[in-house]
Length: 157
Image (cartoon, rainbow, N blue to C red):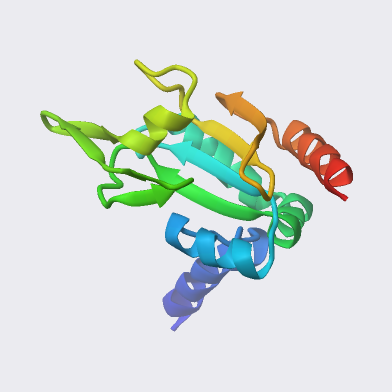
């Protein structure tokens, strides 16, 4: 019984310590933008990127930041090398480009400034009209991300 109690406690602790960013998909985004236009954050990552994992953990740990993102932005968490479905974005269709055992999604290459080898994590913030507001390659410090997003929101109103 004691083991079960400890196990349940350990399973529930992350729920209380971490906030959760509400994530959208590109197909949901088109519908949601028509109903309630907001700026969009596209976070591009890969499963093998340890910096991406650390960064996302830190992001979800910051309750103020996750609440701010959830209230003011649509957030798309996009896995660059495992997402294989076709995606319509800004009137174009993008697919997966296989390369041996791996590959990359065409949308990542379209959004990245470094077309040959995108840098992960990659942060792209678009306004409600899908114009580029912020582009950040590599780890985004949560305090800097918070400051940049608040500045973006203050200019949007």
